[in-house]
Length: 295
Image (cartoon, rainbow, N blue to C red):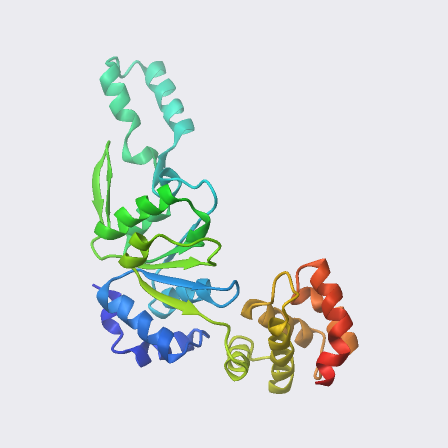
């Protein structure tokens, strides 16, 4: 059964995601709903920390589906995404055959090596086999052109062929979410296969709602102070890495753990490690805290 059939509309998807703590706007809810209904991959681009990966996690939770994650990196190839053979076990198997004298024909011995029990299923193959599932292809922009071409072929047919075992096809196409921080441009061929959405950092009120939803233990006053300060940090043009929503949540939770009810300069300076992650950024922000909190 297609799990997307249980989602009646874009607002229904937004509500289901909201129950997991993920708050999305109308545009994201609509494109997410269309991706489910049309069985098309969803390509999400945006700055780090805007909630791209979290959306895939929320969809899996909302639909009660397994989340299978493929983390891309420079040099990743098809075998690391699709399948490999368990070489150490194959060697042990050969030695066991030799010791038992059970197989004398070379062809038979070779055939026995490429049995299902020695197959190591990687994320893409697992998603095809275990679907319905959510396949998260995280940071596709870190992979190369060759890997993109491989992924495009899989997403076009939702099946792969293993020469030794045959073709594996998904009974129901997995829900595919690809994320990109746009460190390089994704090729048009892959983009055409997907529905696309650029995720912006949320506005102040939306981010306060996210903090209150994901960290309900944090008071509304503290959440508003933290978000206001984080939004000021994002407006600066001198930070190596502006904080994302994940850092906002970390900072709010850290301050709550300290029993903070109202953010002051001293407490903010002592807890900056939760929100900025570079030495240069820490120094710049610490010098500006007085002015930022006063504003």
